[in-house]
Image 1 (cartoon, rainbow, N blue to C red):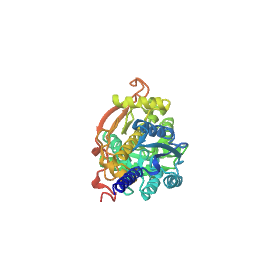
Image 2 (spheres, one colour):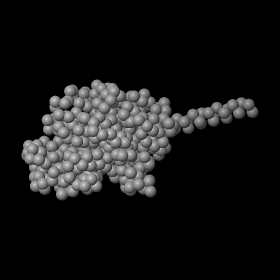
Image 3 (cartoon, helix red, strand yellow):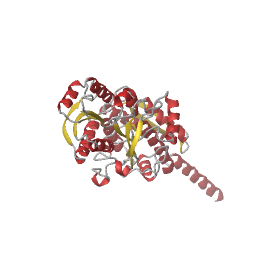
Image 4 (cartoon, rainbow, N blue to C red):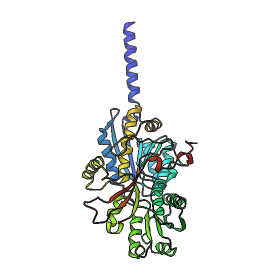
Length: 402
């Protein structure tokens, strides 16, 4: 009898141990960085998002729940169908537990549907459309670095208040651009300004001359650039070549990355007002982290997507540890339960719709004379809380909220 009881006890212990181990699927946690490695956003994300992900894994310790953490990546080529196929393959056959970055709004929306249907966690740091936490929201998705509502509000409202009360938009013809123009138009009119018109252009356009001439002909005081990446750099440079700014119209770039400022130079970007969620030179803690990242990445100045990718992966791993499992729905719930804390987020909550409620900052680009060293580009004009920055839940179209 005693031998039987001992045997049953040992068997129960082995079964319990097996159950604990089974909480990590495939005996590993695998993170997929789905990003742009070859297109118009590659200079902002790509290998730098992969490095940010790996840095978060390394800082966490390389293991979670006693199991190894691995990182893989793929190029979605800025095509929604390719992103869908890759994410489906990763989740169904390659054991990927979560996907991060997903630069490009159309790509992110497509990937979100794949993640939703499979109960997988999606960490969006590289896409800005508000639809991701609006009508397309998912219980297993969180949106990190920014969105078009927050950045349009910060920039459009401020520029309009300063006298730029008539606008004409040059808009990238996909979900991100549409969302950005819609949100900025709302804040222009809300602040007392007028939108005189807009023109859409295909993503990756090499020539903006006809679009800029239409904007110039509108006589609007402000030309709103509802675009980002290589398109933004081309538009800013060509506007300067055509003398548009010199003739009295101003440019308002609604989403600008610090790497864009470095790319066009302070002599061209000087005085530009912008909104951001991260500035590497904000304080000692951000500078220390940025220095480590630059050493790992060959000198790349980390932008808001880089920081958001790192923060999202680190918080995901903390949630896996706290939940005791890598099962997607359980981890997503734990992510909302735990406050986000890292080198630039302090006790930040993830809202029911998946919106990460971090601060945003209104910045003005310095002149070449004001800048003392590489990356010393911004003067802070204002700080906005998450509640001040992002769309209130009262106006949300997210079914999880309703």
